[in-house]
Length: 427
Image (cartoon, rainbow, N blue to C red):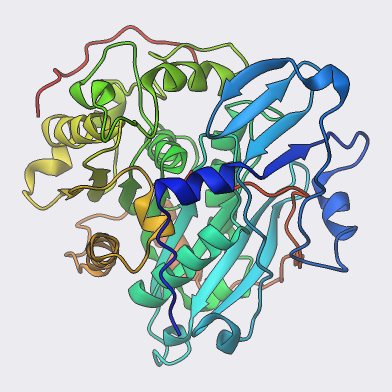
């Protein structure tokens, strides 16, 4: 039986009443902490009262995170972790498995392999590297919210999805998230995991993410285009409700719906400086994209999704418009797709998957991933090498993580500045 967990504002307020305090565990890595949790893969976080000295809030980024004078971090809202299972029957026809991407930095990922891969008679399927949202400081690839969403995406698109578990701020300030996503993309290129080497078509590689994850995949694509050493050709980007900002105010940043804006502009003003440990401002090129970076993108297609009531809506619209104007490959009228969800707010599709607008957004993404394009007239040498060696190299299985790499639970529906010419604010 399918249940529609339609979160009203009152329900959200009730959820916010439950708080999780993250206490730093000195001298232990996330991997070690994860192994101590093997008795219960979806154990709830330890709830405790704040110490007397912690009542002073030094940073308040409601509804995401609070930081206290005593050094504790409080991630608002929480969602239980979901254990991976290689039995498709446990996940509605999708096998899942957790792998270590980079042991030195504790970066890991959850792989989602749909049953269609086994029934495709040797035909390879698209691979999607997905980066979750959460304002760089909350959420997890292992949370119920993202596990359920990515499982549905893998099943509907018939794609192998690599959902990245990256390090969060403030413990790991940006650019840690960018470096972790880059490491995950390079890990995919190694073909060292049997699911990837046996089933993935690296000629159809997509980067996808929502909110902060949308920002991360955009910047990952920019890095790949700048000669960062990526051995994978990126076919397309899926950027959903992306977190981009700036010191200039666009119309959606001033909008208030029903007396409440999900994200107050004043709070968003503080988010990027917080995520970067105060080192960068809101016009940094990674959060307020430059034309030269946009023009450098070497993918073939982009889908940008925005929500009508999202404070970040016009940032997403402007990104899509600037891609059409700045990217040479965007001459094709279908190269840049903008999907707008009327009457919806940021991240609505994660919490209301049965809503009509959520289904429309999902179908748009599925069509985008499965859209067949003409072969590239000239493939990069490293791409040709990768495609030639698929299925032939040594298939050493990566170490498997059977539990999440972080002992706390978060949930959310969620570099130096460079002077350069930016496109206008019209779209």
